Image (cartoon, one colour):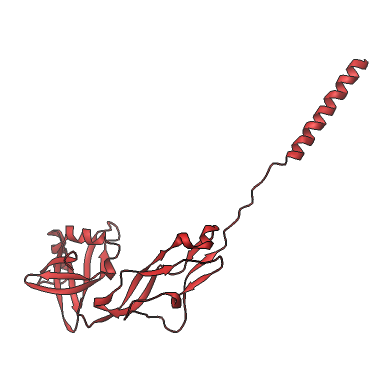
Length: 220
């Protein structure tokens, strides 16, 4: 957790005017909510916020939020961006305890691609789900879910039932064995080939015409 620390300042003023004033001061307004406690308005340093946004797993990473001498576990839930400048305007954090259960999207990663017979034969990996929504304790969020491609053949489909989920982690979709990825046959493009026989035939006709003209000339 020491590498995932966010330092914030508590703020008393709320509303659009206060939010604009905060941004002019170089900080991003936000709020911490959840865990059956009142929402707490905060501000985050703009540079720190920009660094957070570079994290591809931002929304499934637990952070330790430091506000003065108080520390709490939070999960980023939403970042509002300016539609023109693409800069952060507001951030929401969900306050968590070790007993909190949440629904969260976890990225899918594929392993052992070199062991897939289908991929060796040029198959196309059609990824149906890049992320899977699961329910788990906030203290047990997996970084990713692995899909093993060992021994897969062209035409195979891999479903959620084939994935080994960590203890205490379950998919939120339970009414069907949904597909994660399929391995489709390679697409073959037609290639025009030059027919040597045809070229030879054309050369032969030209040769015969030239020989006939030469013979007529000699006769004359």
